[in-house]
View 1 (tube, rainbow, N blue to C red):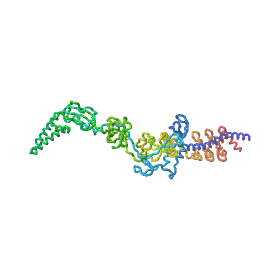
View 2: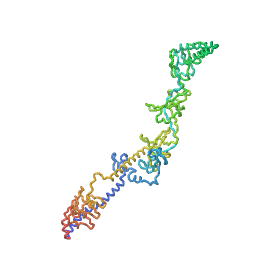
View 3: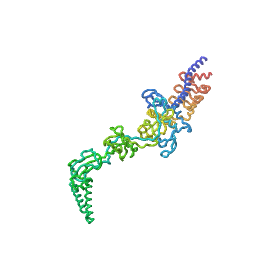
View 4: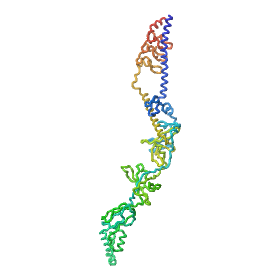
Length: 586
């Protein structure tokens, strides 16, 4: 009998020992899973990127899908970002500047009203720290060669440079034409470009009408002399009117006063009369030859006065607001280095050239010594009136993307804030006027800002990924996931949950989730915590191996069914019969 008992105890202990380790392992596994889940939840916002491909951003560690390198954590994400993003109490928040609610580029250094009459809103330091704010180690900043400059306030002026063409002053161009028909007897100015003086004889013309008019004028003078002693006043007045009419006819034909006076003094009719130059200048066009028959109204010469010249220049339409009539301008010529001619803007044409898309501007320059030749090209610079108290930054500080213009504002502790600005004009010394977007005294980055821009875009992409991930989690909490199984029946709810309300794998179910419990096992298969252990009253396949006669004596002092009770080494119920007989002996 003792030998039989020893044999059964050894067999039962051997069967119980491995299953006991399995049960202990199942007790420790939920704790390990809980700790791993907590660590995962703690770093669930940590992002990973590739050192060679920064566009690769994943939410878990691993290898880069492009090059196979190990991913590295992204700075500013995960628990570091959560702790860094903790909002300070409102009393400790620092106001950086004040911003218009409808225009983010309209900023001020103190509260007030915007251009639209709305109240300005404060922008705090912790608000600009989020989003695309870039933080760079001071050593890295020095290695990158980052240079900075201050935003200055000064009178801003712009010099417009362009190319002009010298031309004639159209106000000083004169045409010489005859008012009578006749023949050119003698040509005294016979080539283009000849310089003439006012009153200089240009040619002599013969006209039968002119000879007849001279004769009439001499007869009128003789008649007036004979009737000067008449007793009748009407006769004297008639003779005077006839002289006046004859002389006026000669004057209307542009007969010079000297020729008329010579006719009066000599009393002889001349075959030809001379045409004189109406103004001093240079002959720029000649249409007369000796012996040529000319008709009344025919233009014979064009004379231009070159004491002043016009210069026509072209400017772009965005430069038009800066150019005003009366503005001073300078002109330099390549064949006269070092010499600058001073002039002024005399006229701005009121239309735009449709082909060249530019605006014509006319300038007037004095031409002493006739050094300025019409047809020459010259370099022109126009001085524009200054804009008082303008905010200016170096031109290289602006990143022009085509859609917007950015500058990077340097903050403390190696932080850089990208800010959109509205640009104005650019000066000759490399400064650009900022209409809105910066404040006086702020420091802007003027070198290596393209590296900061790429880092800013990467940070912005990370923030968008984090926001999308957070939105997805909130949606999961609000609605159950698709395909979730239905809750168990009310009679089984309390039986199959542990103390934490969690259903354990295998509690009264096989691997496919089917209920394998029997009505007789509902009470004695719970431990002190109400938890069903893996294998309690079941073999490895989840089948029931207990019998009704073993319900009472197979419980331990704590009311817990141990793994392997009522089973042999293979998990089968071969010991039920013997165990029942021994119970009677016991």
